[in-house]
Image (cartoon, rainbow, N blue to C red):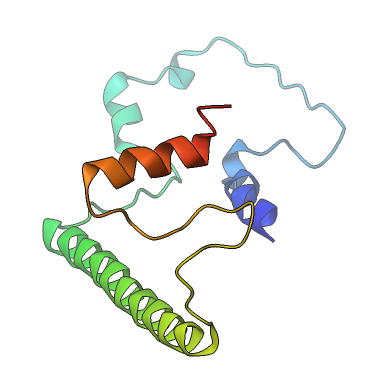
Length: 129
């Protein structure tokens, strides 16, 4: 689904004037040099192409969309914080707190001073081995 969304702009509509003709026959036309066939540049200016252009977007609309996106970020962040806090409270109720970690594992408790921090670092990296 993601890949189809990424390639969707490739399949955007192309104006019919830019598409190839549908028939395979080539039509040739002979133009005789006559004075009536010559067009002046002023006549070419009056013709408008078939293309339509997007109107410029106002700064107010851009700011509104940006604020809506930021509001979405804030709402999702608060939602995730709430869900994870609830998960930690429930998880702490089911686990048994022991001071010493199981054999072969290092403690996940944050050290209080520099000596304990260095000792934990050396234990986790197995520096002395």
